[in-house]
Length: 220
Figure 1: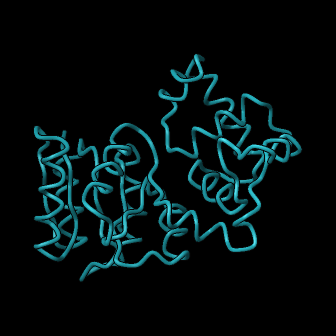
Figure 2 (figure 1 turned 90 degrees about the vertical axis):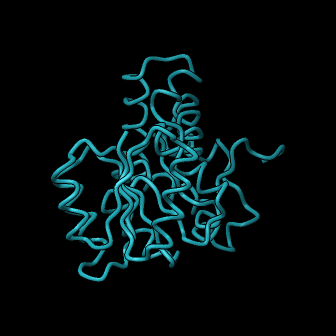
Figure 3 (figure 1 turned 135 degrees about the vertical axis):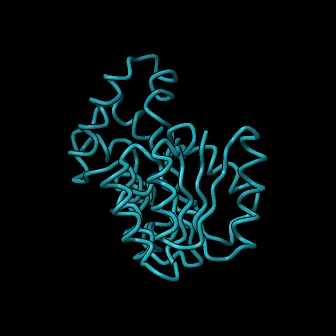
């Protein structure tokens, strides 16, 4: 397994290197301090599995690097690292194809779990970001499953959505719900269309804004 860490601060690269080695001892880890260096490494090693990408680079906007990576290396998972977690930054990251967003203030153990989730095919969105998107007017009004049924979703599709909210991959969802992976993909397609979004990360953020909880509180 090959991983690339892109950050212009040597101490941060060293810290992430240690985290990755703790998670995947056999991982081959490359480091880059600029967008140009990062793209050069990826060109030499197109089989890189994961890229941890800082969006504040000295030579390029990190989002432009993310877009180029998505265009040229669509199978490579990219997780954004940022010192900022404002909503515009988060939305842009997922809009451009990131599979995770990790604030640099994230504790080590949480970062380990986040990276492990992406390694397993899931999507990582920090809980505090979902809470921010929910907004105060929804904070005490979780959306009941009946409300989601009102959108046209079946019980099974709501179960799939619930597991998407937990960042589970299609394979894991199929195992938990005892169904074939293509069936899971079909359900996800319907869920995305019903919610009016294009990606599973947009679905997670939109449902987070709705204030939905799973499992719902009794009586909701």
